[in-house]
Length: 365
Image 1: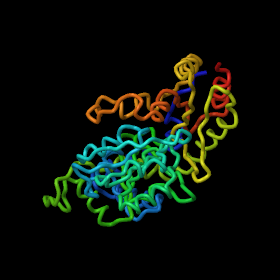
Image 2: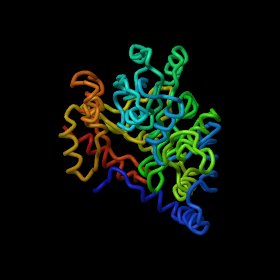
Image 3: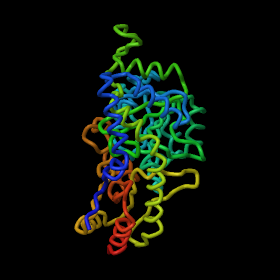
């Protein structure tokens, strides 16, 4: 049996008519930037995230970068980020000229460990950027408490967690702003690059919109040195067609995850840990194994595609060698990078495919 790591075909087959209708609307309207589809999606997504405002942008990295820029984070400032995440989180900090300050994750959840944040705070710290990694919410109460204590901004990185909740409240609604990616592989994915910022701060939303539109509040009037990062009409239309189905997609991912968690019983495998405070949406189902490379080959040889998130931690990436870190400086992130293996997780997996993955993981020695 051949099982891909991810495929979009089952959902896109179900939504074939709606996606084609979305394309036709945009095509026949001949309005491709900042039109009705964008406005409609922004309103719907802000409501979904229990936030007052949503600003569509070009991608998830821009959502984080523009949020930080709109908050006034600049050169000489520091922003706390988890040591275990995709590099876009740190790049957003670098793009505004600030310094990313890495804080280790909880080895069980892979998310930033709130008990380690205060030790990383200096007089240059201006914000905390928690990442809801793999679709599982960070422990937001202690993070927000620390932010209030030290008067810090909080920008949530929600790129992998559309619809996840923390103590019954949807993620993206806790911080000053939240950045989402709609990269095609996300739980809510466009048919190309796309992203959004959600916030309850009207002034911040206006700044993000202006910054993403060349710093312009109206045509040919530029109040800031901005960028070009806008959600185009076509992607907004596709996202608008898919958003009503997001909860269904997330429910199915949880069903698959539950089968994995109850079915995989190999002592060589460390399964994901889910705290009581979160209902995850399982963008990634990441297991850990000390024999990761051997497991990867075993599964691949059996026709099961896998992925590694993330094999080189950020502090050891060449692009951040100027920060002066070496191997051993962030041992938890390094341990995760050496042992994590992501197994297939996508809407449309059949019970036969799920069971095949479970059986093969259990066969591994």
